[in-house]
Length: 253
Image (cartoon, rainbow, N blue to C red):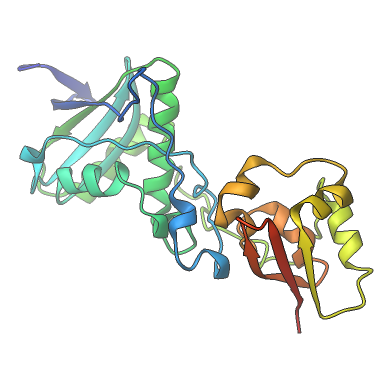
């Protein structure tokens, strides 16, 4: 790819590499869901971009320490513009490796969001390519390019991107398909309650998703909308066992 470059607003960007996520033996992009490995998963919230699914990728370590403005392209379209002090670190330890902690409130939302966008683009059959340009004032140059190009993966200026979890905004009540569980819990005249997964399915009159049987994070309080079926009823998940398929609820004080 020597000599391969990209022109953005009359500026030349040099080729770095193609983004190639890890694949299974049959060529399928691997799906990563690291949330359940976070030790505090039951006491915090998965943020807006934290559910993925994610992929894993890296660029050559020869780009370590490279300070630059970079561009991600798919086909002939510029998708994302960013700046960094260390290009290899930004992609290999940032976008390309989503840690469990970064899936939750206070984690790196941009890493999760860009990783998912790259994964979706490649699964759709498109190639994603990385370019860079040296510059002294990275932040200013990045801002000017974003304003001129308006890449679809960059979040627009003037918009609020703060994550507002249900725990932070209690102005609405849960009204989803798990409403029968909320209604059931509102009738319980106890401070603690243990239910088997099968009993919850009887209450709901449909089967729980496979993720409820496999991932700790599914039972986290506030991790996803279904958890407000019990939170809005005044209960919290106190303990659970995936192996025994039971969950213990405690009435909030």
